[in-house]
Image (cartoon, rainbow, N blue to C red; front, side, top):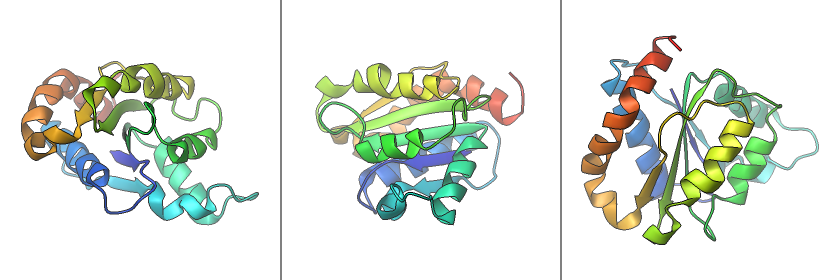
Length: 169
């Protein structure tokens, strides 16, 4: 399992939530392997280099090789960050074929909840990912009760995560 965090700042609540979500889903699927993290805040200055540096290439390869990919970011201006878009635009066409993607957006206002389904899901599908479950629109006010929110969401996504991690369609 890989958690991709598209927040331009490091050490954020989005990062913490992404880690907890990925670890909870992996554990719930019976997999104790460590979650691989791709934190775009650390790669941001190098993402637009004419020739991608090795760490950017390695991050894209890690994301493309994921069986399950949690794609998390904050909601900016009613959608995901440009940083996340730049990173994903650098992937080859259909790079996420065979990957179960789980979109997660952290937002200040519940009015932005549709951004997960209307903006982030289509991008992941365009890259070939399977996105069979609802994404998670996580309102900042709900972060203190993240475990409770996750329990509800995990019920919907767990069978898909388990199948993907076990190598079943």
